Length: 76
Image (cartoon, rainbow, N blue to C red; front, side):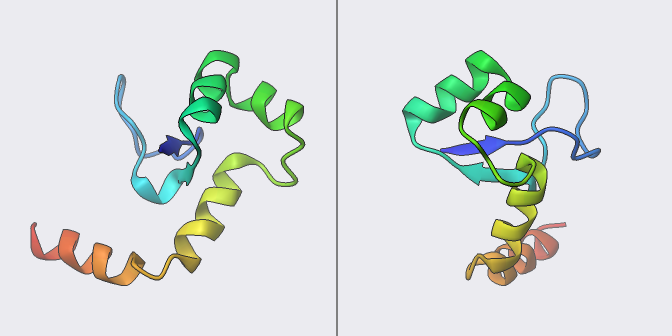
């Protein structure tokens, strides 16, 4: 599941950040992240980087990123 991170700066009230600011989590850990909040989740699970930084690294390395971004651009 896409766990959208904090601090992306591109979301409005009551909306999620872009998928570039999400990391994949299983359903159980996604629910825990929502229940605890990102900062507690990061601390309890010993994440070595802040979640937004991890999401950006994941997004940059994702093989489908270029096709995804191209498709979004074409739909505008």
